[in-house]
Image (cartoon, helix red, strand yellow):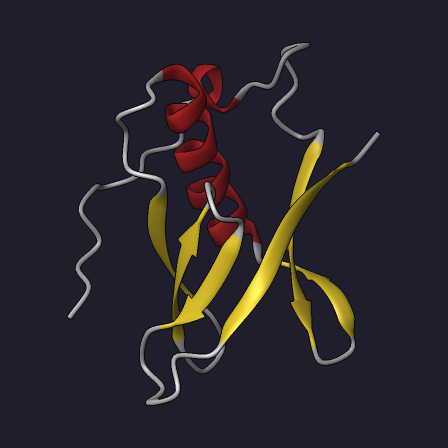
Length: 100
């Protein structure tokens, strides 16, 4: 059983990338029809986890997000998404792209 260990509050300073704009990165997973973007809530959670890992190497690299049907564990170190509710624990690649 996975429990989300942190409550995520939107703190724009912690979401900023190198040039100070938190909107320049879009997180995506490789779905059946190619790369698909996560919803806005998941974007914030994944980005916060990623930024924490950049600042602190011992920070957790995983976060749980809810999709339309399932919950997924996102690992920003291995860049994977794992379905934690389905018995086969399907794993997919994730990535981010710049949204310039």
